[in-house]
Length: 283
Image 1 (cartoon, rainbow, N blue to C red):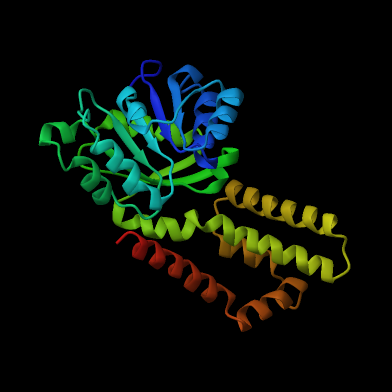
Image 2: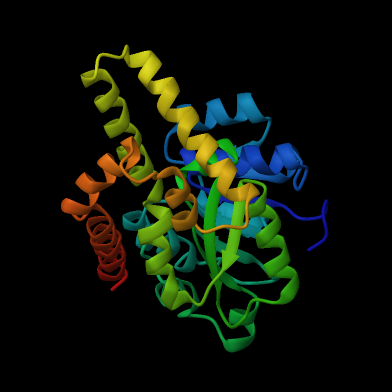
């Protein structure tokens, strides 16, 4: 799928749909004239058309029929209606190869195949390769982390195209689909865990007498600095933590509380619960 000769469609004009459009335009993967978004809200389509110069429609089948790459940037509960509406359309045929990329949490490749492939022969199914993606919200500022899995019909060039699109919004790792629940629990929900830590650190600063804004600046820059330090040094988080934790010092006093309250174990249990819930939602 070389640059410049493909039309890409995005079903869903919400935050993630907008993030995809903006990232692809900014990175130059697709020109605005090659991108079309569909959404049920006309005012949202007007906003996207005005701010990004892209095409907009309200007819999902028209969008599907006219593009070679289709991103399903919709909520899981919308997937049945959207794909059934396409597959049951009397004009539904697959005349050319179309790459389907879904970011709907918990919706398995098998589910997407069931909705799209039912009336198709094997040759037509090969023309609709499916990639399932688990992104996270920092994609909105081009700092996302995504895990992706491909079905049996996806070829090397389609993997490359998907990687280029997702890397325009951050980072991506390919996984066996059975691991996407773990990806969901760790990085999909992960920003919320970090926000919870930030919330707690700011609250502690305020309780200790700091102004809220000062506590926020201290917290955010501490976290950014810690991440930058770990990225710059080939050391584990544990090793770096121990370097800050002097015997009898202030950091050790904090960690005595963390260990007493089993904070690490609680985090592991919480992330495991999120992964298990992702597995439940996919059934």
